[in-house]
Image (cartoon, rainbow, N blue to C red):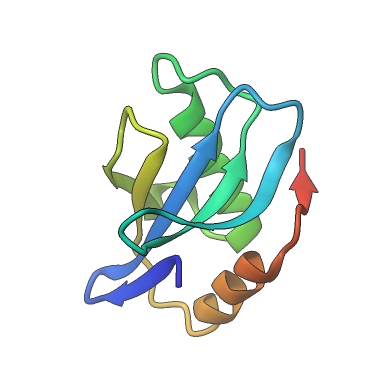
Length: 108
């Protein structure tokens, strides 16, 4: 799973692909240590936090959560990121599962 439940909410493991022609979910990948990441394509360039801002906006829109609910807890300047989603919303796991099942779904 690309997400884990923690006392503060949920940790999402995301692999970003900045400077893409389309913005959206590009599937799931597993890294060399066996961790699963949700791959997301972004329009923004990876400079001055633009890609991170676009990622937060995309996640906010897709999961219907306010932007302030998301924070980058690791990977600020890396393609592999861990995002903390602070929420107690009961149906959030179903939304996360549907994101993981999306096959090359795009938005924007």
